[in-house]
Length: 486
Image 1 (cartoon, one colour):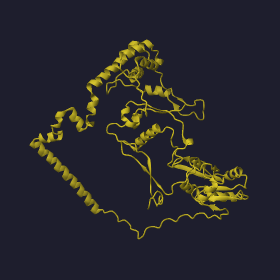
Image 2: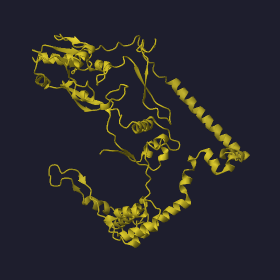
Image 3: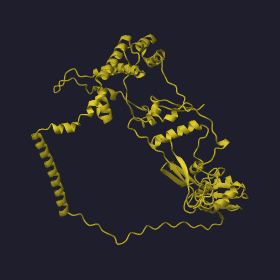
Image 4: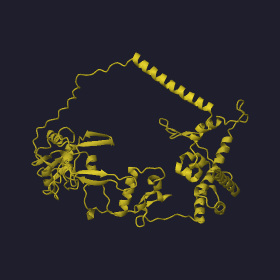
């Protein structure tokens, strides 16, 4: 069975204090709401028509599992019973002991020691016990580095520094990725010391845990974080914590009122000097500009003519050219084969359902850097795929029929030059290529609503009106329908 797991969803799309809901977060919330309400009706973006889902388009339901620390920051209707089943994880002491014991499995710590450690520091999160283990290894690293400290103090600082012997020791023991290959040994692989905690006794474990808990108490008692973040509070929060602040004037007003006459005169003198300095600098820049004016710009009498467009190739078409409506009718009702000669990438991305792809070009590269080259094996592949030359064929190419390598006229000219086109009794070119076909019909074969304009509407922050499509009248599309007049 498949499932979708979203870890820490509140960190990605939750709304916290002073954060603004972006279009992306609204789209995620809107998509999740739609999946909860209609779990079997999910669009695959192949058909952009607004229609009721057919029975064969319904998909199998897939469970969605999300995790988070504060789900109250999510869009409230998403949490409603019926849309989301909530499970609150509250591990028991036994569960915590099991996880901590697995954490210390490589350190040969007994289960009884872990249980006493958890009982001694009850209420601590799992990160606390992981930090305790990390502290034990930190001590090993410090002791290893101390072995490279010089015996005599530095004559300038008076301190015993770690010598360069540590770096030399690390660099000397490094190896190559492929040490046996003389021609290409590969990059250097740095050597890492194997740190092993020598003292994993219960006394040492309890000592490190107690030190960490003591540090936590000091941080909570000193409340340094509040002092660091005091400027992040707005005026309402400051007044709520200290109501007397509402009656007191701001600090800058108090400083101005308590200033002596001598201090006030000095402050005014400084401000005047700064203003005069700014004006003098501006006068100097103006004088410099007058002495050395910039050269005048050359004005052309008339605008340069646009570069000439390259002439399009002209083809002596021996084959008929049919419009999209005629080709669609022959393809759907008469069973005529529709041959899509565009690249395999373009065909796989979007193409009429039931068409046959014989790519005349090969598309390689990556998005924004696609490269198109002629498929030299196209003529042979076409002759092999359509060996029966008595069957009618419709050739559907790119938008530029005569100028692009995947254009229908270019492709048919290639077949004619190779002698492959001879013998086909009924072969025709679809006018306008796939671009014009797509404007009239969807890939699934449904007729589009003329020149109707689809407008995407994005809701305001806090709403779930995301990606809604509204059909608006344009160029008299709906004239004569339901009493709508231009």
